[in-house]
Length: 361
Image (tube, rainbow, N blue to C red; front, side, top):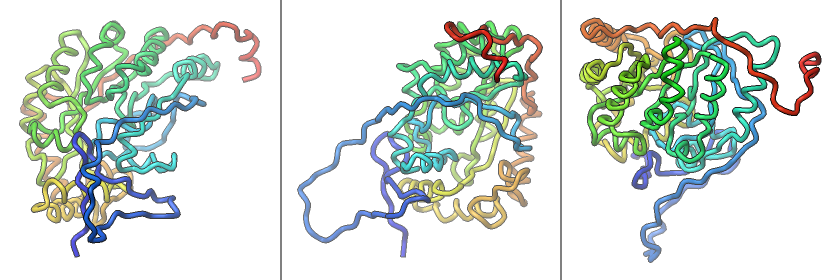
């Protein structure tokens, strides 16, 4: 029996509030045969929730990630990317990794103040921080809230190095902070361009900037003197097969570095993405998922360090060769931009805090 599909509402990546892995009850809609006069429900609106930030920097010791600390001003992401590996994090909030992930956005109140306090700690040692490693720091709500900008202001003041990955053109708003830091070797920006196919992008990343707009953002950053790379992640078998064309367009716009990952389907992402495939590309859904399993050793997802990002086997090797050859031809480097940690200066204590506080930290 074919799996039931839940076509996403217009402008959304997921069509269902599927139960998360900690849920005790699971509810599924079904057709009882009775006619309904309810009509088409209105498209779901985005809901903003606040939480008090208890900490700012998150640390990791993963050997296949190029940073050991990160900053994430938001939980959930309105871009609605069907493949997003961060969707399962909404389960920790007792929310669905499906539609809730892209319609219930949690913003962290006081995050910049927490960052300032952590950078001021006497035992803090600087290293490049990744901004938006889980969800996009320039998703639509950032235009109104400015949480990412507040973080950049603290990093600008302290001359702390950072790197950022985004699909949002909103990063251009903050060039007044980014460009001076770039001139001092303190930052780099990566713009994700998954495909040049506008129709595919609208379905795959429904509320992210269009591919042509992201290329224009690359050019704007480059013109301002910012080191810019392009992310062509994730690579999805039989869908976004234009990797070489994306790399060429990004290089023409001024990008000097590139990286990619293969599609990962941890936890509930497998259900969300399979549902999306059945809704948009039913004729190739089985083929796509079969190749994803080949890339991950016969499973939907392999969490092993070293292979989870690039995959394994013959298809992973072919993809790696394609990427390497294209980068070599286009002059794109595959190593991250080295950033300067020697300029860091701890922030001044926040007004009103006793100067002796650091003695007890």
